[in-house]
Image (cartoon, rainbow over all chains, first blue to last red; front, side, top):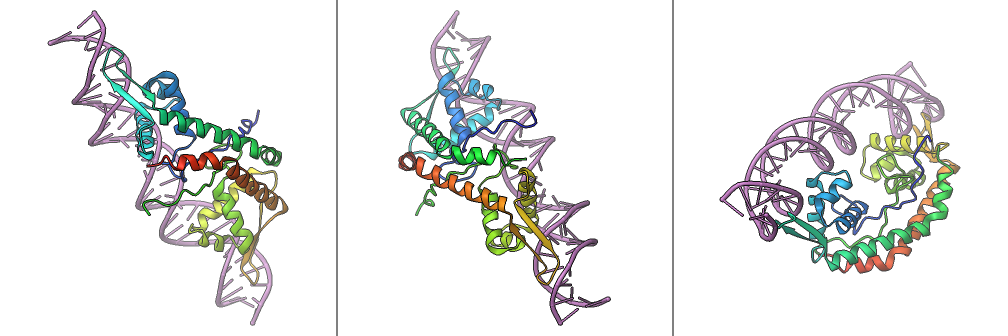
Length: 117
Length: 117
DNA sequence: GAGCGTTATACTTTGTCAAATATAACGGTT
DNA sequence: AACCGTTATATTTGACAAAGTATAACGCTC
């Protein structure tokens, strides 16, 4: 297997390009936070440092009118994180956009794949 | 105008993420090369150094089975660059993918825009 | 063969971003 | 009150990418 198979994954950034935008990285982090209830666990699963994950959470919370992720500190479990209703909506819409873009570009995408070295 | 209007521009990378991929930057460079017939002029128009533009051309030429850009050195005009048939095809398909992704994601994109801070 | 504008390539410097490290704060449980 | 696992934040270090600088090669015109 000389190269990894083309992933057919359009990478959408919103509302503009750049590191501060909401894109595939933040969306994936959001999914893992929703699944695990912890920023730290999500970060570990994604192979990134807690620092970086927290940085991303802060950035996306600041990007929208209200936070996407709520956080609790201390307590018996040490604390945790969860998605707000807005967070769920953003993730749902973004995931749907990814799928829509994927299907809309599939034909040309496959054609281009055959032209690769 | 507190922020630039969201550009509604999905940024597609092919065949995978990363700096070596074919994405919006290389596509735009390709368009300017086709229009001007010169790597240097295209680079200037895009506000990038000739060095960087040439680097991008080399990278995309190496990515596909055959070059996307042909080049001539010397001569009365000093030289120049042009798209090959393959280059035209790649650019056409990529542009169509951009447009298809744009229309396919428009509704959710606009909805998300209203949720921004 | 001198001049010109372009492509071609190496090398150095700078700037930026990610990673690592360290420390603090929180608040339930025990 | 000591403990624990988490969130919160600053600071330093390191790696890598971008930018800048320099120089060469090319080939047509004159």
